[in-house]
Image (tube, rainbow, N blue to C red; front, top):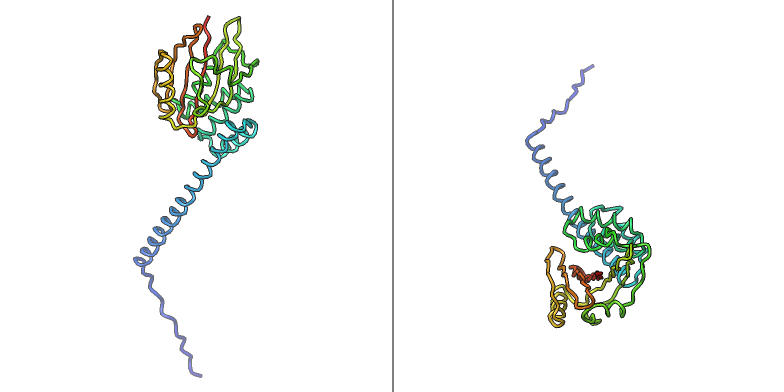
Length: 246
């Protein structure tokens, strides 16, 4: 019986150089593929975040639905603790709901993220003022607040949001706090206020900050002075604090 010859398949030599090139191509392709995917996802996430912030603004400044605004702000912060806009609206809504301790915490957190934030400094000035009796806030109407200023706010430029009288402790005079939204851009809003100061012949000091302008205005009325904060944003936010002196 003839011996069957077993034919062995020739062994293939591995070309490590070629394999290395292939692996390099795969790695490079994968890097650019996933980078492209991330670049496509990131603008979508930014758009969604901006839409949520705009929703917070509408809830707080138009609907005055502070509960829903606070809920939405907390949803954003659960995903992104560094979102400065969410902290700002969270603090403002907590203030509107008279949750002053929570509001203070939110604005202090905002200042750690944005140390020059004029809005946070404004709120904290009120929250930390030892004269303030924040548990007894009194709502002030748009007409009554406007009457305390040296000029009547133009409703075609400034949309009234809210005003509070903060009764002072120990027989000291109160602080009155208000918020407006501008229907103009930042530069037009600044020009409007400075024109009003000039028309009423008011003395004022201007501090220009990263997030807006702060005006210290000396009133001609009954030894009163007030601060006006014009804060950049969309819409431009105006906060006016009246300090009544003895």
